[in-house]
Image (cartoon, rainbow, N blue to C red; front, side, top):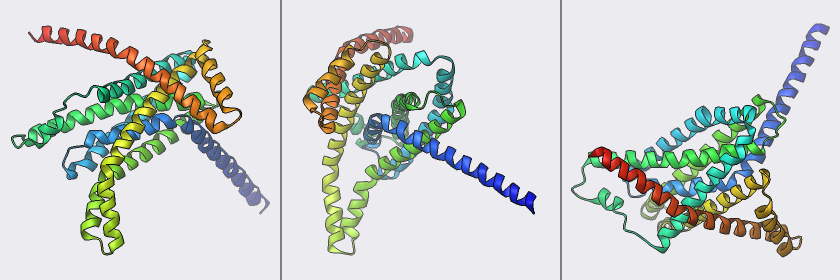
Length: 321
C-alpha cells in the first residue's frame, strides 16, 4: 500500500511539474505574442484584399489555402530555422529583424504612395469580364494565393523572430520550440479566423437583412452590409499604419541592440519628455515617431526596389528573346 501511495505521490509531482511547464510556456507565448502584436494586426488587415472580387463560394477556400500554407511555413520552416539561429547564430537575429522591418516599411510606404498617386488596377475587371473563362479565374486565384502566402511568409518570419527575441534567452531549446509552436498555432488560427469572419460578414449581413425573423435582426443585417465597405477601408488604413509603425519600431530596436543607440534614445527621450509619466501618451508618441521612421525608410526604399525590379525585368525580357 505504501508503495502505491509513493507512486501516486510521484505521479502527482510529475503532473505538477508538467502543469507548471505548460503554464510557463503559455505565459512566455503570451508575452512574446504581445511583442509581435503589430505584425499580427498587419497580417489580419492585409489578407482580406486577396479574396476581394472573387465569388462568395471561393472566399473561404482561398482563406483556408492561405492559412494552411501559413501554419506549414511557421511550424515546418520558420520554427526550426529560428531555433537554429538562437542556438548557433544569435547575432544574426537583429540584422534579420532589420531586413524584415525594412520590408514592412517598404510595403507600408508603397501603399501610402499608391493612395497619393493612384493607378488603375484591372485585376477586378478581369474577374468580372464576361469573356473571362473559369481557367483564367482559377489562374488568377492561384496567383492571388501565391502573393498572399509570400506576404504571410515574411510577416510570419517577423512574428516568429520577434517572439524568439522576446523569449527567455536562458530557456532550453525545447522550451523555446514549445513557445514558438504555441504562438504559431494560436496566431494563425486567430488571424485567419478573423479574416474568415471579415470576408463573410457582408454575406451574413445580407442574409440577415433579407431573411431575418425580427425587425432588429433585419436592421442589424442592413447595417452590416452598409458598414462593411467603410470597415474594410478602415482596416486597410490600420494595416498600413501597423506596417509603418511596426517596421520602424523593429528597425530602431534592432539597431539599438546592435549598438547604434541614437534613434532609440531620441524617440525614447521625446516620448518620456512629452508623456510626463503618462504611459499612454508615451506609447502614442513612440508609435507616431516609429511610424515616421517607417515612412522615411519606406520611401527611401521605393526607388531602390524599382531600379532592382527594372534591372531583373530587363534581364528576364532579354532571356525571353
